[in-house]
Amino acid sequence: DKAYSLYSFNSFIYPIRTSNGNMKFWNVTIAILFLQITSGSCKAGQPQNNNCSSSSPITADRWDTPPYVKPHLFRRGQVISVNKNDEDDNSAAVLPIHGCCSSSSRPIGALPQMTSNEAQQILEDAKEGWNHGNGEWTQMTLGQRITAVQTFTEELKQSRTELIRVLMWEIGKNYNDAAQEFDRTMIFIDQLIATIQTSAEFSASDFQNIPNTKVHVLIRRNAFGIVLVLGPYNYPLNETYATLIPALLMGNVVILKIPQVGGLAHLLTLQAFQRSKIPAGAMHFITGSGRTTLPPLMESGAIDGLAFIGGTGAADKLIKAHPAPHRLKLFLQLEAKNMAIVLKDMLEGQEEGGGATTADDDDHYSKDNMLNDILTGALSYNGQRCTALKIVMVPKGYGMQVAQELAQRVEKNLFIGMPWETHNDDENKYSKITPLPNRKRIQYMQELLEDAISKGAVIVNKNGGSIVTDDDASQNYPEYVDSSNLMIPAILAGVTSDMRIYHEEQFGPLVPIVEYESIDDVLQYGLHSPHAQQVSIFTNNQGGSDAEEEAAAIIDTFSAVYGKININAQCGRSPDSVPFAARKSSGQGVMSIEQALREFSVPTVVSYNQPQSKSTQQRDMMQTIQQHSKFMREL
Image 1 (tube, one colour):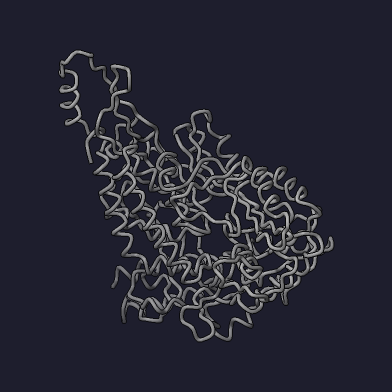
Image 2 (image 1 turned 45 degrees about the vertical axis):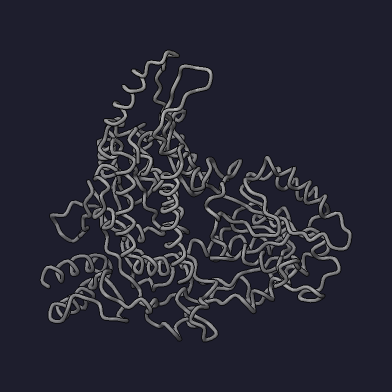
């Protein structure tokens, strides 16, 4: 208890002492003394803070209980506590994290902030772990690496509840979305391993004769070096692990730069990495400002691969900082401005919800289906998905109609609130619109709205673009909730090419509706846009229209422009077995189960010549060599 209380005292008092003086000091000291007398664990329903461990037994059904994630570092395979109030502690400074849904005075955790020198020390550890391709991890057999990753995932599953809670409180995912992210990540890893075990491309063990030659070859893929991984805030587990785990399985050494937003979840994984069978030299973490920590790594030339999910500007700066960019293997997922293209046949002669067909009719794609798909595609997780529909193109004369029908659905069907709130007395109906992760995102949404409205666009839905005030939220959560990041979605009609939102990726709950004169207008937008991830075409070819020919023309034109063309479906990455790619400034590299393994490996060929004679000497020799080789060993 004494040690626990002392740690809590040091870590909690530091930010208070620098701003508010002695009065706050005494208040906190009394709280610490009380903890010494009582207990060092959280009670069910009690909010967690620095005086209460994030691993304390809080019941899973109390998702409205805020977490507190203590700052830790990960060095040489060991988790290291950060306690900046200790004068003898030379570790990194810390940044309080308030997340989407906690008051400014109540952080939900803290992230260590490394200096450039500390980041360089991590790089030196990684170089030692790689050891020119002869480090412990890379020289393990493929089967041993699989087992090690499996031990990690089993350990990580023990933290599922804590990770879900942190995803809800830091980045505003409702319970269902947060749970799905964790579970999908575990499934993705299982599928990666199954693919390795069943595909000869990754686990071949037999030499094959090249027809009409003496050459016999065994081809396997293997690592290429140190991979720097930078994941996004919106899917800190799923998107990050979609690059990190394939890179590890293929034998690379990985440095993960933890994001400043969405980073607390990664701190909760450190213990799982420590307890796994992954060697200390294989996995490394850097925290803090990217502007401070990343340039020295790239400038060193020691980074062999960059897996980056984020903005083009940051990606370009990192790549340019590398002294030998020609050998830097890149995997990039960047901005997108995915279009929903509504063809005229979807709107002519159709009444919403009317006629003989309905949204539940499996044999007919109706207008109701289309509106529901557009709404979900645009506003799922507040529109904070790279695959979200970010601009809706409709035929001239139908813009306001589509906007009004979408607005009705926003007002009736999209529950707005905290990530843990349920609605209509249904424990499974969580809020669909939740707070954005920070005020910067809100300010950017407001800038886009103000620009569009000043140039003639109109917000169609009631209170669209409004911020839910603290007073409204305080009725339910007076102490813990600051809802100033909670924005009501805005359906924007009358959007034109002179508006910022016409061109920029909003990455938030704004739905711009644009009218087009002809299909050529739509084609020109896609051809000249710097973004080229996905597009969705909505059509049903009713009433003898030319929609089929129009859809075919769009597909043909965009087949060398976009990575995926969806027909009567929203944009998305799943299923993970399907290649997920982009063109132009939206990405480089291909994501899927098999493709991810290819992205983070290079084929290695072992070859020998077998004479045409009946002698088996060469073959027998190679079999003996193979039995002693870790690289060629059969799974």
